[in-house]
Amino acid sequence: MNWMNKIQDKSLSEVNSSIDFPKKGSFLKKLFAYTGPGLMVAVGYMDPGNWATNIAGGAQFGYTLLSVILVSNICAILLQHLALKLGVVTGMDLAQACRANYSKPVNIFLWVLCEIAIAACDLAELVGAALALNLLFGIPMLVGVTITLLDVFILLFLQNKGFRKLEALVATLILTILGCFIVELIISKPEIAPIIHGFLPSTQIIFNPNMLFIAIGILGATVMPHNLYLHSSIVQTRKCDDTIVAKKEAIKFATIDSTLSLIIAFFINAFILILAAKAFHFTGYNKVGDIHEAYHLLDGILGVSIASTLFGVALLASGQNATLTGTLAGQIVMEGFLNIKLKPWLRRLITRLIAVIPAFIVILIYGESSITQLLVLSQVVLSMQLSFAVFPLVAFTSSKAKMGSFANGNILKYTSWTIAFFICGLNVYLLINTFTSLDL
Image (cartoon, rainbow, N blue to C red):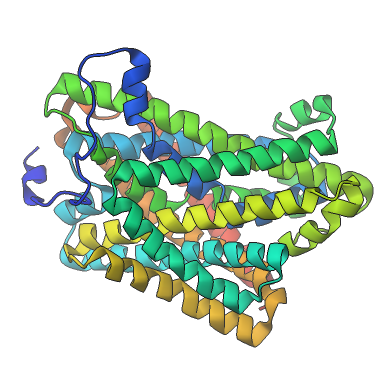
């Protein structure tokens, strides 16, 4: 594995190996030590881009597309496992692994694509947070977008206090989102049997063009490319000895953390679709596909004044949470691909401005009614970049020359390649159809 000698610098060096992992102790004690990175990754699977597709899917087609959310989550669990395994085994994040294997022009190309994807994701997240501020407090969108810049300083402050503090904030916001939707479901009282049936794949998803389009949108919005870079890096915040036994144990607990966290993300996405189905599809409002419209209709339809407020609070927590991890991913890919070190506050401020400026321009030109289209466009950009992260990840982790005894076994290898090509094909389809139907 001489390829690892090409990269001497540590991923996120300021927090790398900063959290102790107990060599002795109970299973739960060890699991707690590794709990955190998975939650930070799960944030990307419940951002405002997911909300837009889940609301549209539930409002138009009821519970049918729950099966798509389930399949998407299974793909995500597998890919995030590969990402964390790469980080633990090689001591490199995905961007560094690319730098060690590809030529400089290829790495610059991959870096540019990744930066565009992160900016697009960041754009969706800050717009979602600004929209939540607008819905909850009447703050104008442009002012709300400006307020979201403050998260740069929140992230810097918490990371300086220790990476665990940042993980604790992310966990708190995730629990806030989950709690809000649990209350929403209790209020809406959806039927259990149709929900269970919705998790079973249906052939009508394939043969109904409108349903297929939204289904692909859900898939495209679920697996986020920057999460693969992020996870391969932040899993290294835990101290791990350079032995096969230690790495196997680290992979085991990191995978449990990741899987449980993504299951939480799965439930939140499912809850959003179920709420949209119950509140809109079965009440005649099946044309609702807009976060803004959904917020204003919830109170009246469900007959409880707190419904819209809970929805807005969850949206604010979702947008704010995702911006924290998005800016962190920006630092990882710049340092990983180019080996350029900038002060953390400067790198994050640059990342935020790249997203804030387009948001300002679009809102100024097209008005606040363009928000949903902006979210859709951001998902298209993410879809364009996804395969450029997935294919290297599967290739690296399937190589015995690079991973040694930790290389993917045949079943995992062929399953991973199948998912990679499946996602690639669906995202190409989504890309073509979105650009032919987009009306900005």
